[in-house]
Length: 91
Picture (cartoon, rainbow, N blue to C red):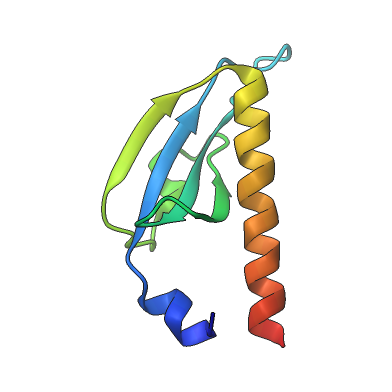
């Protein structure tokens, strides 16, 4: 998939949250996906709230709450997709 195609494809942000960790730190973020649901990347929310996605115009946002283990799995999957996209764009 070309770099141009990645930019032009309709995207969606999925807001994923779970309980705070044992130190009280939030575990929330946005997974950027294609319209078909394929992961493109991860944006960590941290303490920024919606300011973490300021400047992203990815259309619709869906919110889901998951277990801590599912959160970790989804974040890992989205982060790996982001790395693959960056490597593809660099070549």
